[in-house]
Image 1: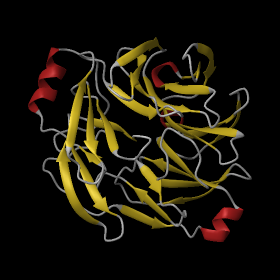
Image 2: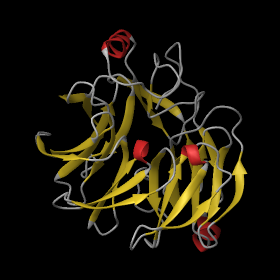
Image 3: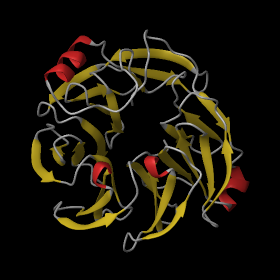
Length: 318
């Protein structure tokens, strides 16, 4: 996430009480962060934007729901984050080069904040790499893996204590962004935005077992609910790419909107919701053939999507 901060500072998360429970269960709902408008609420039965929750001018991006769907946690520029970047300037990264490398080396590292969601107090913070981006838990829930696009690494920590386990160095200038565990828990897929490929890492030793070429600017990544397909949002190419979920062979490409980063399946698995920031919309795709069937507009700079009930996606509720 690209967040401008001049000092290490933590405030409270933005929390929205969304009144889920039995009412929410009767109406499946998606929540979409808009970097300028707040959070869009989508009725998944009607596939319409029902309202927008204003959060001021804080620029929300990351979001998550609690287990029963009653609270929505939103990370924005004046709130606490699972990852945050004390020295990062606002805006997307430019192409790799000597100046960019020097800037990353000289800027303060990002940090991982561990927050007690009952008391909403900071438990501890842990230094990470530069420009933290994707976050994923190991299938057994014991490890936290974080991609650091500024120094081309993946950091691994113990869940709870935040103790560092190891750092995996990737190709210089590759800018790792998304990370997702495979359904069988044996591998991790990491998208590399600037070298237009993704890596398949062995979950045991985190060594690369496969490198797969993609279209330009791969970011959001997730397996479908069945594990049959791996989906990658190639944002700079306005394409959603479909790969075999086991062999990682390329299956098909689907044209979508501009700067589509994150996505989620609907709870019933029948559709895919793709947040396309520069199109100011959520694209709704048929999950059987990944063809666009609708666009839900009026969501400026759409960024992330979560649903209730919980469903598979590149950002998931925990």
